[in-house]
Length: 362
Image (cartoon, rainbow, N blue to C red):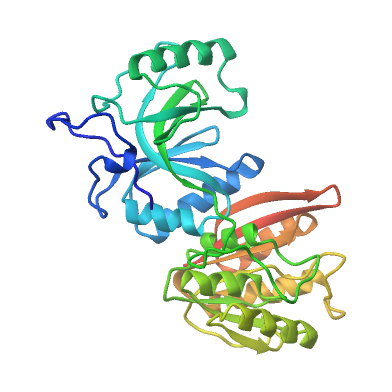
C-alpha cells in the first residue's frame, strides 16, 4: 500500500517544512488505523457485503459504519492492502482523518501543522448533501488547511459528502481490475461472451470467505475465471466442468496464467469432495449456457444438496442464480440446513436479474 499520510499524535512536534505525504511519519504496518471505503454505486449492497466478508476473512472484529456509498472502520495497513487488492466492487480506500457535520461544521480534524502538500478531491454521493452546503464547507476547509481543489502534487485529500456527513481522508488505494499480485488486466486465450466477468468472480470468491492457502471448489467452472483469480490470490482451486470443449479451453486459460488449479472433467453432482474451505460458482441457467438436457431447477437442487458434504464446518459457499428460481432456492437452502447469510441482486439487463447467494455450513 502506498501509505502516503497518517495522523500524527497531538504530542508529536512537527518540525518539518511543508512536504509530500510520503515524507511524513508512518504507522506500524500491523497497527489498526481509521480508514474509509468508497463503495460501487451500481451495486452498493453487494459492495458492502463483499467488504464485510473480506474483513471477516482476515479476522477484523471491529464493526463497520456505513452511509450512502461510504463505510468506515479500523484496520491495519496490511489488511487494507489485501482487501483492496482482492476486491471486485470497492472503488477506493484510504486513511480517515475525521468526520464532520457539513450543516454545523466543527472542523475538529487532527491535522499536522503545516498540513502536508496536496489537493482536495470533492465527491457528493448520490446527491445526499445539498450543493450550497457543500460549497460553503469546501470554502471553510480550504481556508483552514490552505488546500485547493485544483490538482497538485502530494496527497489526494478526499472530502466525501454522504447522507448528511462529510468525511475527510487521504486516498491510498483505487480500484484495480487487474489480477491480484500480477498487476495486469484480465485476458483469456479461450473465452465466451457469457463468461463470468472478473469483477463479479472476485466478489464471489470474497463472499465465500476464501483465504490464501485454502481450497476452493468451482463446480461449474466454465472458462475458468473463478479458478484463475482464486489462484492469483493464493487459493488452491478445484475447477470442475462437464463440457469437454470448455475443459479443453479452460486448460489453455489456466496454463496462460500458470494457475495452480486442478481441472476436473466431470459432473459436479456426482463428484465427492469433503472438508474444502470454500465454494464459489456460477451454475448454468442463461440462454447461452448448456444444461446438457437437465432442468435448471434440478441442477440447482442437486448442487445445493451437495454443499453440506463438500464444505467443512463454518465454511461458506457463494453462487449465482436467476431471479425466477429465487423462491425455489430459498426453500432448498432451508431444507438442507444451510444458513443463508447473504442475498444480493445483480441487474444484468431487462431479461436477466441474478441473485447472489451466500450460505454457511453450520
